[in-house]
Structure formats: C-alpha cells, structure tokens
Image 1 (cartoon, rainbow over the protein chains, first blue to last red):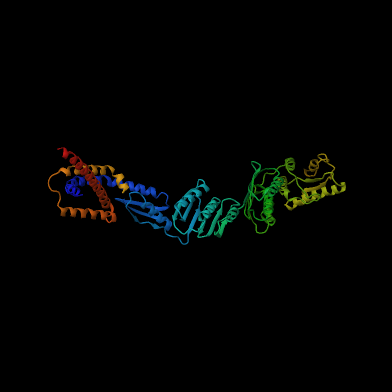
Image 2: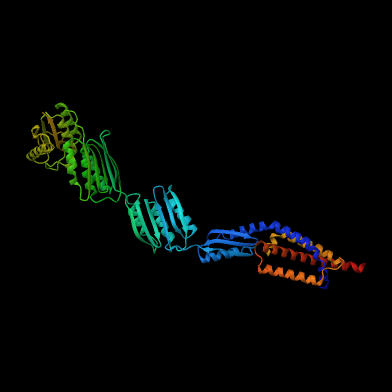
Length: 464
Length: 98
C-alpha cells in the first residue's frame, strides 16, 4: 500500500494528456449523445398517448413537454423517459389537456363538405372519427376541426360513430353531442331518410339521449309530363307502395288514350295522406290538356299547360280544386291552346272516328253516368266538333248483348243522351246533336267473349 | 453508467492505456512526486467532483462532461494501478538476478 501511494504521487503528469483526451471526447460526443438520447426517448414514448410532444435533450438531461390525457398517462410518460438508458434527469413539463365542460362534438354537412368540430377525447379517436366520416360520405370532403379535450362522457366513441353513420343520410344539417344529449337538424337526403335516422337513434349507447331531432324529410314529389309530339306521358317521382303504383298506372292508361305512358315511378314511404286520390284527380286534369306538366310536391299540386278550348280551361281551373282532399293546395296555370282551323264535315267525321278508335267514352256499369276518366277524350271530341260548326252530328249508343234487349235499348239511348248533355254543358248548341240508341243490334264483334263485348259497348259520332 | 461506458468505449480504453503507460513509468521514475498536502487537496477535489456528479447538481452538458471526465479519470487510475503493479513485479523479479 505504501508503494502504491509512492507510485501514485508520480501519476499526475498523465493527467495533462488525459485532460486533452477528455476535451476531444466531449467535443466529439456531445451532439451524438444528445441525438441518441432524443431518439431513444421518442421511441420510449411511442406506446403512450400524448399530444404536442416535444423532447429537448441537453447533455444527458431530457426536457419533456407534452399534453397528457390523464394523470396516469402523464406519470407513465415521465417514467418511460426516466427509464431510457443514459438519461440522467427528466425535466417534467407535461400537463393535462384542458377539460371541456360541457363536452361538445359537432358534425355538420353542407353542400360541399362535412365538417367535424368540437372536442375529441383522444388523438386516435379523432383520427378514427375522421376516417369513419370519410367512409360514410364517400367522395365528399371531410374537414377535421376537432380539438382535444378531457371530459368525454362514457361510450362517447360509440355514440359519435353511430351519429356519423347518420350524416350520410343527410343532405345538409348538423349533429351535435353536448355531454350526453344529442341534437340533430337538417334535411334528409332521401325519402325515408328521416325515419331511418329516427330508427337508428334508438340504438344510441346507454346514457345518451336525443334532446331534439329536427331532421326534415325532403318533399314527396310526383311528376307527370304530357308530351304531344312524342305522344307520351312520363310519370316520375314517388308512390307510397306497389298497389297505389298499379292503381295510378291503370288510371293513367285509361285517361291518356292517345299517349303512351312511360312509368318511371319509385315506391317510397313518406307520402302525404290521400296521395292516391289527389294524384288520380290531377292526372285526370292533365289528360284534358293538349300539353302540360303536373308537379305534386307534398300537399301542393301544380298543373300548367294548354287546355283544348276555353270551357275546358275554366272547368280545369275551377272545378278540379273540389276533387282534391282537404289540406291540399291546387295551383292551376292553364292557358288555352289556339283554336285549330275549321274543316268540313268529311274531315270532322274522320277525326271523330280516329279519336273513338284510339279511346272510348266509358260509363259506369249498366248505367248512363260518364266515367270521369273519359274527360280527356270528350274534350278532344268537343274540340273537333268546334272545328265543323255547321254540321249536325248523330251520337249513337251501342251496348253488348248481355241482359234484356229493352234494357239495352234504353241504356244505349240514355248513354247517347248523356254524351250530348256533356257536349252541351261544354258550350255546344244542343240543336246540332241527335241521340240514337241501337241497343245490341249492331255488334262489331262476337258477344261470346269479354273482349268482343267490350268492343260492342261504344259511342259513335256520325256527321250527317 | 453502462450507457456512458458503452457509448465512449474507445475513449475509455484510451484513458486506460494512457494510465497503464503512466503507471509503468512511475515505478522506476526518479524524483519526488506530488507532496502529501497537494495529494490530499487533489483527493478532496476528486471526491467533491464525484459527489457533485452523483448528486446531479451540475446541469445539462456540463453535467454530462463532468460524468465523462470522471469515468475517464477512473479508467486512467485503474490503468495506472495495473501498469505500476505489473512493472513492480517485473522489476522485483529481475532484481535478485542482478
């Protein structure tokens, strides 16, 4: 030991080169050590949930600034950095993210984008919500303006995800979660969307409740366009179900005797009450126009177009309002088609025959009451009769062979008279028309089939 | 400590070799070394620096440099001791023969 002290007293000269080496070592290694510790600290924090993490290394001392989402998370983060090999001291500059009271989250949709705003409890959840919104509104821009805050109610994510599912069903609108209350407003994208949203809201996670659901349904629209050039009637829009669809299609094909009915209707819920009655009445009015457009939007009926003559125009303007159910609005914009030039009796006869070949004047079974579906063809017959004002016309009634001859004879006469009454009511002079009943004496076809019978039941116009 | 050693292994081996050489020389070097008083002061200084290092009172880079210096110094001392001891054995073995 004595020796060791003696030797040691002579070791000091080596301290000079040692100091030089120390200087070089410090010079060379300070920055690499700092970079290495910074990288290791960042790696250690990978598992922790932090926001705005900043790591600064000075020598072997690490300064950690970050927003943590819980006291525990904050402690864990500091601990993780302290346990990094080589770290000497940790300067804890972490803090908790502010708590939001109330905790509000919004999803707003307008024409061009979906905006998510308010607070999200965790960065990962924020990303998941944005992603879910993107998936839901495929193609539409999603703007993420969410901040981070503590204080989200339990099961917040499940609630927000469910509500994001609904944003796809909105045309525009806003969904808000305020603590555990949910508010919705806006307009559904499709008919039935409002109901679908209301149904989905029943599955909100436990604890959440709907404070207000002001989502409106889009208008229930039915449209019909009568195009005389293409000889078509195009039906578009919605009908409540298949039976109403069939009823409307049948009624349309009876009313529009010269046009082809193009049926583009779709079935959807959400129809206003008495939809069927209103639409059938409106189609009846449309059938009396030479060209026209019918738009039924919720409980509002708009009909525009040209009537065949002044009387029909007045009738359509005034009379049809009565056919609509209560609470419905009827807005006719009817003009009168310019009168066609006069023609002589032969042409008139030809026109009558053409019209009556294409369509039929229909009556109630075994009675002389004119079916309202025949208003269209009667208007055309009246228009034609107006073009040859000097002619006299025999209106001939025919029946099928069912029933007694005397009954059929009387029925055919009454039906002919009913037609004349209709023409006179429309403004034609009664003196021009003679009613004749032929009963079943002049059949056009055999009376043994329903088809033949239908052909035999007819009204004919004969110019004399 | 293990981190410091592994990160600066080259420099520490250098210090060890430097110490080994210094120890090797010191056994046969003539003349007086440091006086006892000086040695005590130096010892006290070293102890104070070690204490400062363990107490983490020196912040940031200076703290790192202090730690590095002390580890290098420790290696130097170990090198010196080994060098001096080996030289002493070599010298004492050759003396009886001479």
